[in-house]
Length: 175
Image (cartoon, rainbow, N blue to C red; front, top):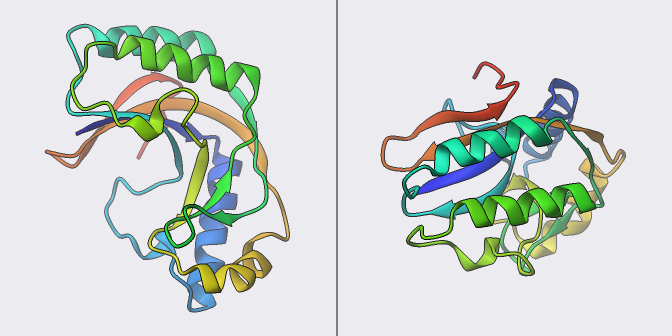
């Protein structure tokens, strides 16, 4: 599997990592406990089995033109009742336009995940996976004191086979 992800500016990344830490400190599930070196706050735009020919270059061009992109987060919530705890990203015309362009750049790719399709995609930054719905109130008390804002400044792809990341454009920060 290959993903297409947007990365946060340092201030927004720090705000998300601080929320991860507060969740872990409260004894709640948190991505702070995910120790893989590629683990960092990101917004997933798409996931496919593999990139079709030329897709990486098309994506790099899109991101070089579109980034940085302002972002504001909404109130933390649990998706699908008991799945991930997330900070929803307020969808702007620029973000949804970029998402549609990414989806088009991946035309012909096998295994495009339908939950990332335009009209179905819920833009968000993940705070915890496999979160329990009954812990939502405590989680909101822990993370919702602020609703961070910032910018998406770079794009990358995560390769699930090799567990590595590859820059796709923008000002790609060091891992």
